Length: 329
Image (cartoon, rainbow, N blue to C red):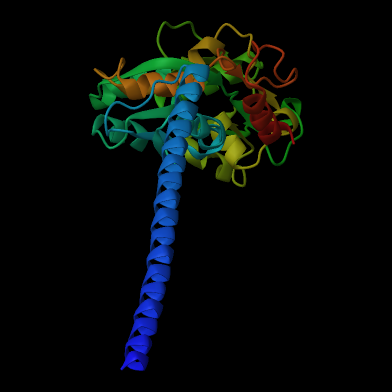
């Protein structure tokens, strides 16, 4: 009987010991899990705090306002070159660092960026001059307004068959943009280079503004986006800066002549950030302006030809390098 009780006692002791051991391990596991959870929570909180601090610092550094509430998405319409490159490579990182989500919508023409902005499909666009904007507002009944001048792209005269303007034969065909403001700009460039002379006007220049055409050039109007492709069919074409870049035409090396940054007309052709009326003071608009014109971009980025950026007030190194590489490499 004693032996039986001893056996039971030993079994009980062993069971208690095992249970005690299990309890100890469970306790240890629980403590470890709790500590791990606490550490993870602390790390997560620290990460969130760090992220918020980073956003705050980024916003403070570039004076980029953070999103208000849950509305943190900005949609900006651009033409591919160089606007999309500038926005994707320079602007988007700054906005994202300040807490914004950015959608860059690329358009291959000059009409849709404005109609999409008018219809509320995007928050802003960046591709056009103020003269073009005014023309489009009037012709299409739009309600858009410029909020910040960013840079100037030179319009140039290009040819596949001739190396200089002097080589253009009498009767040569020269293509120009068919929209009012860009056509005026192109015809003025032809006149500035002695190919034609113009009658004085207070309005935009067009084909009827030509007073003298001593070489009987045939000047034909085409959609601006088609001008680079027209070089196979015409003797020369006056091409907008963005479409020239998109066609891998180098303004410094390839243009027979181009606009100069210090001309009296150049200020009219600065590319602007544009929004719909009523949104001039919105947080999204302020964020875009700050990203495009922060401490290093408080300038009008002038893509000048012969002197590169000599006519430009100092711009952000990355921004300037990006456009310089695109233009002059």
